[in-house]
Figure 1 (spheres, rainbow, N blue to C red):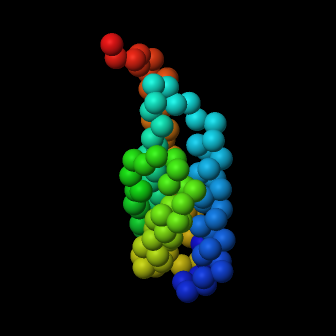
Figure 2: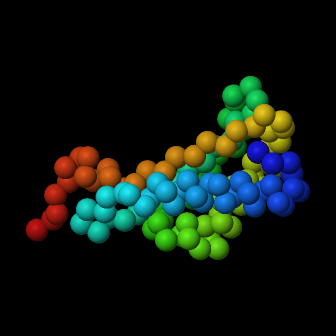
Length: 111
């Protein structure tokens, strides 16, 4: 995680996270028009203790191609810095594609 106030490093981390999100949603199934994802992040300190977590919530994948997506990821990083993880902190992310869930559960289209 970049040092607090290092805008160049922060921009790089935001770009890396957005790239991961875009790659993740690019191949997702969208059965029956279910094209939403749930996104959550956590920050762990060097000892592995979770010191900060937050969710972007349920959104459409297009948000990851907009300024809003970059802003929301950046806001999480600010929250993590305020939690004070120090050196060795790690950001962990989870992205759940709701269309994939529907597909795996065998949910069929309603009549």
